[in-house]
Length: 453
Image 1 (spheres, one colour):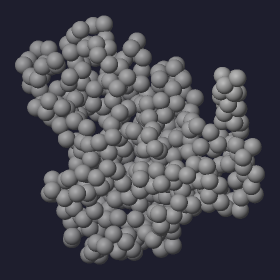
Image 2 (spheres, one colour; image 1 turned 180 degrees about the vertical axis):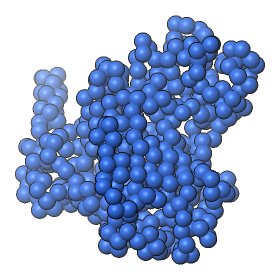
Image 3 (tube, one colour; image 1 turned 30 degrees about the horizontal axis):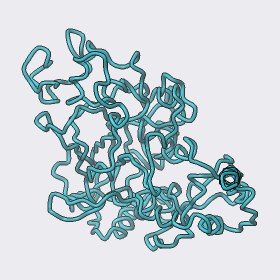
Image 4 (cartoon, one colour; image 1 turned 120 degrees about the vertical axis):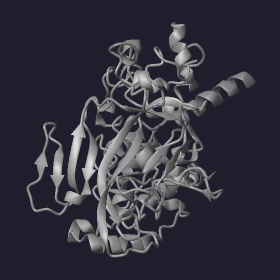
């Protein structure tokens, strides 16, 4: 009798958890915050967990910097060479925030009802955020339909922000674009051939998602490695296995990125504001926009290879420029003499952006909204407003400087059949790696250098 009751309880439990959320959510919902409040009736700790993650704070793990200060870095306080920075541009940037209403610096990060459960969990395909709406959904969204459809995250939930970061498919990362929603095996072996979702690698505990963004690179924490799954002697060839101490798996298994969609590789803000026609390239991509300047796109890009030990140094608001030749927005830590470093692939994003020519630091301009550059085409006004937002002085004098930023390449993994071969890097025809730039006297197969073992 007890056994029958136990079996009945199990079946009953499975039945409950197997039911659709249609059985539990009846609405109506007049605001997205009402949906979150309803979610929290059952998932009591979900918002609290989210609020401790970088998806909410846009700041990553705390670490001690070179000056022995405890700091946090992330999208909230980074400068990049795309749309430059979040401060003073909140409603446009925070359209991809996992919250509702981050429209300025007064946003309440402790308000649980402002956590957006739907953006990561809705499965109806009808939930859309307003691109300039500070994370709010489009007014046309049927919140009840979206709420009743929720389930485990899919590539679509992740991709809607990560595949389209920077204003379009493949713009920022190069190895993340819309082709990964339903990729071919040759585009990404894990997702296209094996059917992986993002969360198969980016494992999650208490809503904290593993995987190194730029904030994690700054702190040197929260990394995922191929060897987390592929352990031990992963190759039949012992010589190839010896490379694992000095060469990242991605170096051989991602021979190129931007395989289906081109990625932006150059953005020149100094050309913005000119009264000339918008233009497009052979890929159909925009090469000139009055509000943003000139662009260059590339496809099937061979990565740039650098020594990397899992951490990097980043330009911070107000840092003085040591040179006005090329400003490095981030610098990878690691070298040929660092036993923790490996040769890894990166996308190099280059461009020109505004800086204060008297104070000698980069400017955070207000681009979006009233009095923003996209409305006024006035760099002085945009600089004055943006710098006030971050409590930095603007001298009234500006110029443009070339900048460079490195973006890690981890996706679009090729199968072993399509990975690099020994002769791509070594021997007479081996021109893949710039050995001298990596610190070698030449091809280590021919001359002495750090041994790959």
